[in-house]
Structure formats: C-alpha cells, structure tokens
Image (cartoon, rainbow, N blue to C red):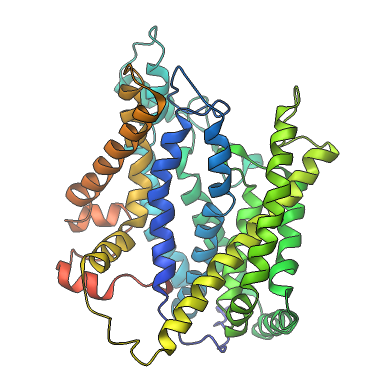
Length: 430
C-alpha cells in the first residue's frame, strides 16, 4: 500500500508565526526557573532537596504547569501538519527520528544518568563513582505496560527527556495513522470539525471536554509536569488539527476573550480546591478517585485548554492588528531583541536537553550554603541558566556533529543570516 498524501486545505500555505517560536523559547527557559524551584518544594521529590522547603513553590508552579508543557505539545502538533504535507508520512517519520530520536539516544547515554547519580551522592554513605553507576543505570528491561516508556530498570529513568520520548512516539503514531487514513475521510473529519467551531465558544468548550475527562479519570502524572500522558497526546493532535484549516485559527482569535475568562474562573475555583484536597490527610489530588479529587482534575483539565486558546488567540489578534497598520513593515529591522529571539528559537531543543543535569549539579553545591531560600534559589537560576547557554553555545551549535547529536539542522550559519530568517515552526522543530 502506498502512502496517501495529505489533502490540500485552506491552510496549504504555511505562514510564519514568530510568536510560536517565542513561546517555545519562553517555556524552555522557564524550565530552569521551574526545576530550580523544585529544590525547595515541600511536596516534590526532586533529585536534590534543600534542608528548608516551602509550599509557595507549589502554588506558583501551578499557574505555569497548567499551560506550559501542553503548549509545547500543541505547537509541535501545529508544525507536524506542515511537515507531513511537505514530506509525506515516510519522510516525516525519518525526519522525526533524526531530529528527536538521535538526541534522545545520545542524551540517554551522555546526560540522563547524571541527575540520578547526584541524587545518590546526596547520601553521605554513597561512594560509588559515576562510571561504576553508569552500567547499573543502563540495566533495563522492556515493559510495554508503561507505554510509551517501555524501557524500565531499577535505576533507569526517562528523567526530563520524557517530553522527547512522548513527542517522538506521538509523531510516529501520527505518521502511521496518515499512512493508512483515506484522503476522503481526513477531509470529512476536518470539514465536520471546522463547521462545528463556527459557533461562538465551540473551539473553547468542545476540545476541553475530552481533555478534562482524561485528566479526571486517568489522573495527573506528577513526573510529567502534572498532566496525563494521554492528555498530552490530545494536545499534540489538537495542534495538528488546528493547523489544517484557517477556520480553526479564526475561531481561536474570535473566542480568545471567552477562553481567558473561562480559564480564570476555572483556576479560581480549581486551584483552591486542589490545595484543599491535597491538605486532607492521606489524600492525593493527582490520582485519588474520590469525588473531590475527580472534580478538581476536571476543572484543571478544562482550564489548561482554555489557557492555550486564550494565549494563542490573543497573540494572534495582536499580530493581526499590527500587520493591518499602514506602517507595519516599517519597523522590521534588526536589533538586540531580534538577535536574542533568533538565537533562542534555534536553541530550544538543545537547551531543553542540557538544562536539567546542569540545574541538578548546581543545586547539589548551592544547597550546602548557609543562606536564605531566596538567595539559594536565585543563585541556582542564574548559574544554571548561564552554564546552560554557555554549554549550548560552545559545545553544541558550533560544529555539525554536535548539532546533529542535539537535533539541529545543517552546518553552523553566520549569525547575520540565522537571525534574519530564524527557524520556522512549520519546519516541525520541537
């Protein structure tokens, strides 16, 4: 059976959307702040823990995790539509294996064992060297019940690379689906969905229901930034569908304000409810199947989708309004901001892969300081962010072999060329 090309649609010509690259860069840089905060979080069992902890990190992080990682999956789905159209199912699968599979394998051997080893080193009685620990970390077996994390072991873990594992597997599943999906069926599905979202509010509430149900019934997986792996699959597929027709994007612009209001209301009710359930003796709002726990997870799941519609819709409104101004093209020059944006947009995946081992290593030293939590936190953030960018700049981006190992395209380009054009999300980067 030959691969069926994806049917042309009103979204056949991809338009560059720099705000999507900016969001990706913001989320990945924000992970340094987030993981640094886990060092001081009372609830989370992070690799390195400060002697003094606080509940404030849980509350602050809650307003970020509700939208940040779902947004990365949604944007990845948007890029996958354009990549599949251009390459076909087979070419898309090969491209994803090179861009995500190669970095995943390399980082699993070279970087992933560092954080678990440092966790063990926090015990003064543990004296095993890194080279002695490495074979034990890589002692794995296959367990399909934990799909897509089929490699399991006593010391092995996917760590922060869970995102890359999910993204790669979901992309390959999507390629397989579109290899088999009849062209007419895909067109009918798209037309039916596009007709449904013509009604005001439909793009907010209809997709929110499956996400809320999965989040409520499957539970929230704390190691995966508080979302179910299957909710992430939905966010990825939603992004793919949204990119397939301009009518979905129009609906998101139209319903951005109702989505924002809905998100604020849901969070205003759900977040306190979540904290109340979490404060009950022996209760776990992430997994308990009691009515209160299921209820707060329903609100959380719906709030997550509303946040995405609000953020993307409002940014698209702003961009559309700016383009409509007569002088819209007059201020398209360079500048420091544009150079930083271009630099970070190309660096998203390498920065993601590099950041957590560096944060854990820095925190291992900083928690020994005799200093307040705020001082330690700021030190971990500043040092980790600086070292992560330096590692990317000096060890990754400057040579073709290292760029290949970290999922970057081609040879290093002169700064002038790279910052002028930058990587487009339609190329299916992260």
